[in-house]
Length: 249
Image (cartoon, rainbow, N blue to C red; front, side, top):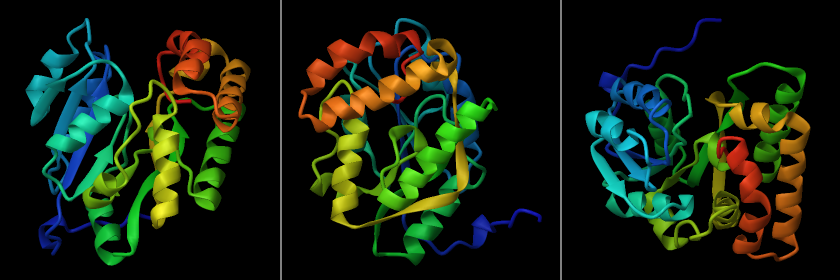
């Protein structure tokens, strides 16, 4: 079946989208995402928040992004800073290695316009590599997202800016900031899971090994629910995550 065409020139929406991308040494992956966003209609505001890259990430960002901000490393801190400087009515948080589906901005605006009861949403997860284990991980993530309204940060979270501000944004944690925010968002109001998948890099699973990465995911959640602090979780799990390229857990 052919994909439905969206006539973006006829869209009646008055709302706008701001894309916020936290980065740290992403010079190789960031340009592809920024080029994609530059072709989206309506064109979103693009904000890159760098956490102190030692490569040419900021130089690459300056070419395409509307704003390039710099702060200390920490994804929660970076995302919050981007949100503070965003002009859009809807905030869309993307990782630098994300590959959103075409017309994502239009589809986000459409669903948020047609369903004013929604606080936000996310996309289904798909990896850029295909294997039985990766497909199983993505399937589990999508079930969790649909049934429990608990997507992770690498699924392209989007939220109305007033709701984001009301909830206090992301906690300034070194890990699990996306999970903690999504829990607050799910309790606040309804969210949606878009039909189209957002493709994310499998580099972490490839470098760590699928079983090791899955075990780290489970253990991080277990520590979180046991009430361990973010600093304790970082000390325990961040060295492993960095081995895998710093992708989401």
